[in-house]
Image (cartoon, rainbow, N blue to C red; front, side, top):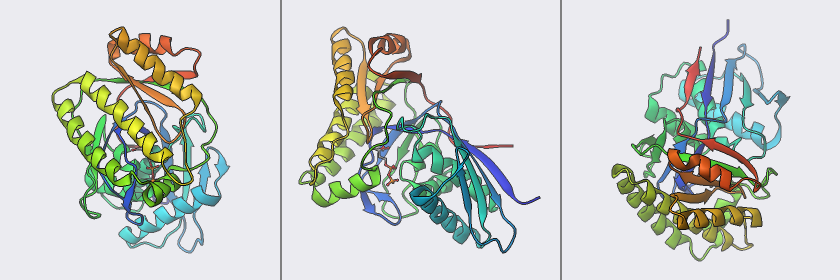
Length: 320
Ligand code: DP6
């Protein structure tokens, strides 16, 4: 039988966001970030090496042959794995996402984390967690964090070796995910990130502010301070959306429905509930809260979108 491996990985939601690259080719970020790996929305990916002489890779995503950008990025990633392994063999990649497509959770993070583990194993590379995180980073920056269990810090680093994610201790938390709009976003994070670096007058301030947020977040995690973790998460997320809306031409991901969810968090906080919002490059909002308050928060956003409560989950794993 031909060499093959199957891996599963989950998306992650950043509490301190990655937004901006110092190196597009190596995917080195301008600042570090911190995230929760989710216990839901798994991506399962199988990589099987083809016979010597096969001319092209294939990529089946959710039962349909992929083309365009997704295929290009997968082939480029396999080229990188082949270079590391000293192999020229092509591969067949099959991937299935549990996340509803377009919900903003069928993310490149779980996809490239699962692909990094399955491909490196099929090509015979034996990578430790750090090397796997660095490899996943080359597919998509945020994928470096989906390798890691529960909570991850991605150290910005200064070169390929020093830019990787590792686990950080943090209190048990829940994210109430509110899908206010399941349509595909108009501008990809990759594109909008580049536009921010090139055109925002606030970009330098954003970088400094992210470094400060990560330092504070690290302290709040060490102290087990869920409230402080939430406060940093919400301010930082809104700063990211501020710098994104300051581009030329402007990009705006938050919709009226997103703002309504942030307003629910404000209202609940007035009642003493520790709940804080965050959103990635799209309109869907995640509310961060403690396990004890998750049901109350979920009930409070009912009617504002599809609601799902998730907690910290495992990093990338091989399946037999
Ligand atoms: C808003 O990891 O998708 O979700 O490295 O270009 O593939 P590339 O970008 P990607 O960007 C994620 C952006 C974010 C914030 C985050 O996850 O930290």
